[in-house]
Image (cartoon, rainbow, N blue to C red; front, side, top):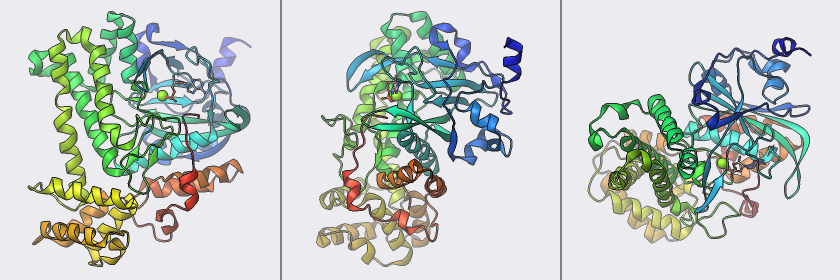
Length: 493
Ligand code: AMP
Ligand code: MG
């Protein structure tokens, strides 16, 4: 087959591509083609992401699109690459990692990078097979869209495509590809990679690229004496602090906060053994492989700071002064608590800060932890109480009624004289009714494994607008069944 014939067979997805990250040059990636996923089928699609990408209506009806998104057809105008990065995993330097199974098609003219995760081996696969299993692909797809629905910065997912091709993990599973979308998939680990290899030129090129594209304001300030790299580090650290505040407020546990899983844009990235808390347990460990609890729920803000320290170390050759680098991380310590308190205040229906807010927040979290009270249900019921004045559904959640009543008194005093309807509305918009609990994902996965993908679509619709009531969908907003606590999610995906 001639090259020309091959080119004419490329799938035109209706997207226009630009060089984007690839303009950095071959030191940053390897050009390659995805490995076709045999006999693919659709598992789930997000029309919201399709619209964001500007895909034509009916985009998914064509077999050509399905073939292109599973690696069987090249995408017209795209130059697929796998990028190289390194990172600290579980606190230990892991050396070179890289996109071992995610292949980036490129960046669209509108500025969105598109990646096929699970699209086959790359030079960075190390011992891996380059594949992703259906189970973890559905989880990533649903959670990306759920986080976006919650208003939490995240990479997005256009679709999940499956195949009956076997993938060998603890058990034999089936393969899938998630088409992921983000303005950039650059991680802390990309910077660590070039710093660790003393490749200052590439390190600078990468930092300049990321600053020019995503943090242009760093170039036009006098902060840190006009040291743009220090300003950049500070900006990343503040975005990360804001992200962590949102995770902690919604009860999201990431599970694998290695530096290669930290987005330079402060997005939630690389969904693996994540979990939304059921009963509130600050020390909850959602990753079955995390035996030491390094990434336990209440450790996350500190771990993010530790990861930022690794980023600071990597940027040091550019910043040029250790004291300045350390100073650039300083604001994390104020931004995180301020953002967290702001989010918690909104959950309590409070628009303005007042003295005593911190004990009010700490008090309720203590009560929730003591009773392992369901985190999402508590906040949603508290919102209901603010709307209708019926406290019983909330009080029923606590064994320690006296403790709850005492807290409720201070909560009510804090709201004295305030507009209850307004507060109730703020609470309804701040306390989701639907989150992607493990057991909900699991039910949708098991049905999908039997070729019924309707559960994925149903969950997606609820999670995209999680603050709405969705009459008739209460079964998805209830307590987890007993078997939910037996679900073990590890790094294996
Ligand atoms: P993760 O823990 O999923 O963030 O992955 C850590 C590193 O392992 C990254 O470099 C991944 O690309 C790589 N990796 C994970 N699973 C596979 C796989 N099945 N095949 C190849 N590389 C993988
Ligand atoms: Mg990763």
